[in-house]
Image 1 (cartoon, rainbow, N blue to C red):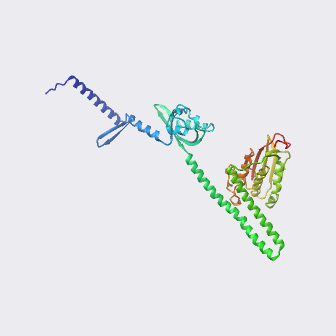
Image 2: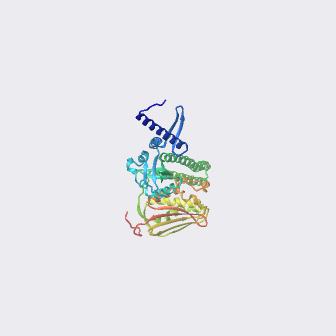
Image 3: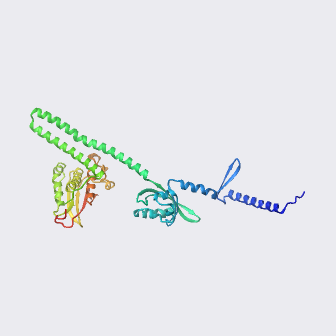
Length: 408
């Protein structure tokens, strides 16, 4: 039986056939991998999620991330960034778009950033970078770069992770370790002279009871030596406390550095004699600078004391000269030397060389010297000496005239 359909119904059926054919072709293309989509089977049958349908939730995910997300051109231009990255910079989102990402890092980090971008076009790479916010705050971050393809154009996807909290935690842990190490060293160093002092006082008591005046004098002298050692240790701890809190005030005046050096050498001559280290001084006169004589005396004394301790009973050279508008003081020993890996860190607080653990000490002498020299606008560095030993070099700015009569 032939059914006569109205022209409008026939047209509607034809359209439905065309849509069904298109749907079947699309499904075949999806199954063959010709179209980016996901087919999910469920109780109600198969559901198709195309890339277009998935774009929105991915964008929501990126926008909700705590990390910053950026798309960069190969030239480093920001093609896209999420709100978290804009918050890191402290600027509205639209002000970050289309700008060179290097504008948001300090000048000293830009070469590193350019290298990361050049490498990130080809492969995954990461590096730590400082972001400069609009308020002038420096934010430590990690940039993780990966090559991506945006509509046929090589680009870079970047995840920016804020490292502030991680670094604060690391600093706190380092401070706790440093405190524990300091307490262990300080207790050991203070216990030694204290024990000796107690022993000497006991001997003093027995010698006094026996009326042995010579032994009394000897015990008193030894007790005074140990008391002086304890005083120096406590003074160093106080200096470190003042330096750390920024309360160390300098009283600057124009003076002859040669006189300061000669006085320090004279004061340490007995210690050097006991250690069998001859102090060989070559200090010219008229090397004038503005200094806090007391603090600079202490700094130079710490350097010479260090040379005596590690000098292995060999001569120590101390030379002061003027060169290129600077006063240069060189203290050179022929002792155990400083390992190369320790040269840059021995001026740190509580730091000692890896071969000096058997020599005792708080690890504060060179730290205090470094801080005092820096406050005089000078520099101090350590060098290995050819043939064995170590060299400490202090450089301080000279005053304009060399007769020591500059302005106070």
